[in-house]
Length: 410
Image (cartoon, rainbow, N blue to C red; front, side, top):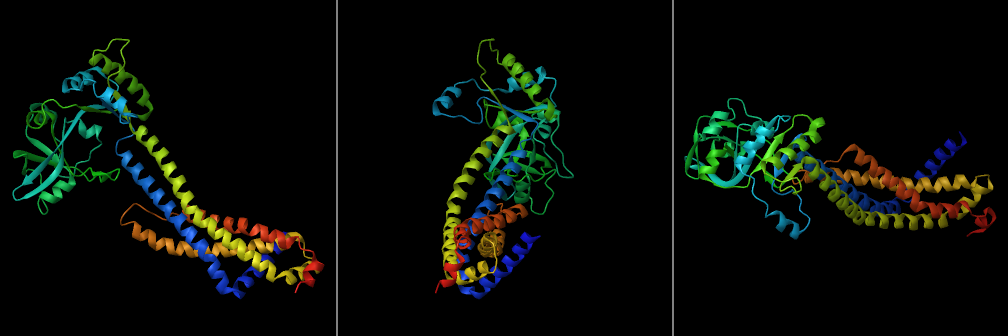
């Protein structure tokens, strides 16, 4: 109870001291305000980018595996050169693999190119043209807008000139029309639009998943690329069976590729977790470097708090001596000056958040930034800790003063 009374009294004296020296207190908090603003904005940006990247990675599908000739991440140029000599994955490999595996939900070949797409006088350039089968709607987790559909197995196997277009392509070519049933030209060849994909947004902030057109793989092989290197998407359907499915796929692919028992794999099985792990490492490094650099401004602000608290202790030496002569304990004096330093910093933190919030709203137009409640709490906690750490030495000096010497001070 006595300690709570000391806290209350210390807070009252601290606020009175701040009010009595308004200009000095405001100038002192500037360093803290700048430090907290920079740290908060850095934390906001890092948090927003992390969430955006994880949302992008989620589009790969946590229960989807990707088989390709090389892995997604190659450490050295020598490794890349060696892996590029592996034989390509062909459509025949994909078809044989589909017959060999029995524990997965769907298998789809994927191959890509770029081309222009045109409807009458309107056109879209640099559109991603994807060749696949009817199974891609499952492996890619694709949604189709109402009124349309994905192409069927018969259309895929027969190579009928049909296509499913992304929402950006639909908006560009058919601003006021329903695209379903219309004919577009891809590299001057007509394709009937049978469906429009639901919007998927950006992937990793690099390219739009809505600026694509999906056509039957046999049409792709006929008109775009005769011998491409395929990627294979495999939908497992159950995260719990992911490792089991990887083992089955590895055995099936070795059989399809006619590898001997002692031969190394000439393919790679990739999954979402690989990108997520890389991003966590990169994000942690960027966060550490960024917060260290921005933390320097907070350190400078803390030095300013320490300096002004030493000045305050010197100015109030007689007051300290009088209070100790009347029975105030060392702890009471120590708490009083710690509270004063922490109060100045918390006020600075609140002002910094008042500045950071509208800045974050502006940043949202350029990047995924959001000032979350946990970040607000961390900012205020950092402010208070800066005050306590910076004010400890001055408070300790005040607490250890001899009351007789303090009362003699002029």
